[in-house]
Image (cartoon, rainbow, N blue to C red; front, side, top):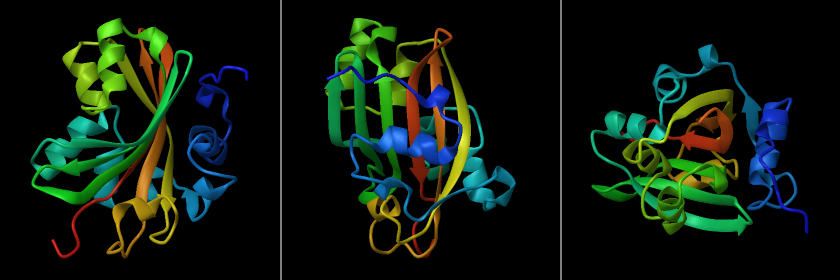
Length: 193
């Protein structure tokens, strides 16, 4: 089997990017069901604040929710230097409350061995690892997405979801090389708060 490669820089649409990122974890086109490309100015204000920036989501979500976030790796896969995983970020004060569902695909050859080991261990969010190890990086969101509340992607947030969730697809450049491709889908707040 040919080694997978990072491809987001080649994608021409949000749908192509989503399919590219999700193909290891979802069959057929399930990843794009109930999903639409959306311009940032069409998103609710809270989602714009959470998504439309060039910062790590780990830091943004921690600031928004007033506490650090915990990582739960659902699935991971390695193919040579290419590492991919889908994850949930939750709050320590409420581990059942999912604040982000994400998929990342990374070329591990572009980071130092100690960074690689920590990422593969799956114990800490990617953003906090890159910040702690002072990896030179640039975050470039490329597309923004809206997922219907009953879509397969939104199902990661639980059954009490009654409105769409929003996300972004982007690339993190490490030392000016496209190193990490991301899908980050967030929930703005708890029901009733």
